[in-house]
Image 1 (cartoon, helix red, strand yellow):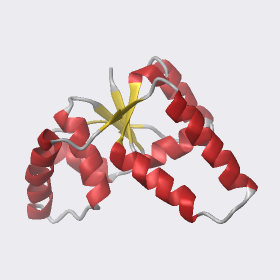
Image 2: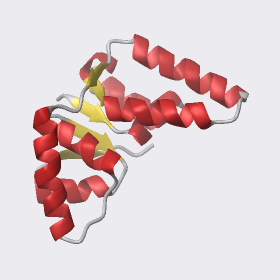
Image 3: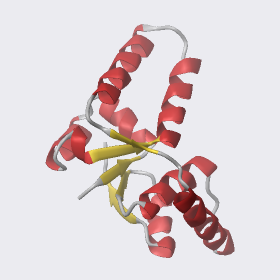
Image 4: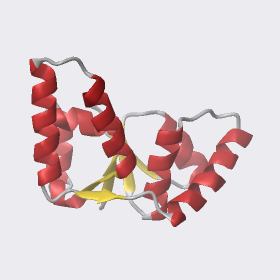
Length: 139
């Protein structure tokens, strides 16, 4: 199975939380895992605004190691934009609020037939209403 990780899940991976590290290992390692350019932007932004500290230095190093691995980084494509518009309208019609980033990440997963791995409950709505393949990965 080919997975796309959301921002929180990558953060847990950066922190080396055992449950997420094990799930990545079970999935075949970082070479079988993708993140989106949206996720990368969120991570880099979060690190940029973090005060200088040992935690920031450690997090930057961890992100660098992940990016230097064989992990694939997926762009927000025209196909993902089409999914985004359809899914956003469906969610709105059902009274479900969402962030641009979460809907964009889920849209990439749907457009590329990937399974989104996250512990964010929003993606359960995307699974139910929009056909997202979703697995809840607890940290």
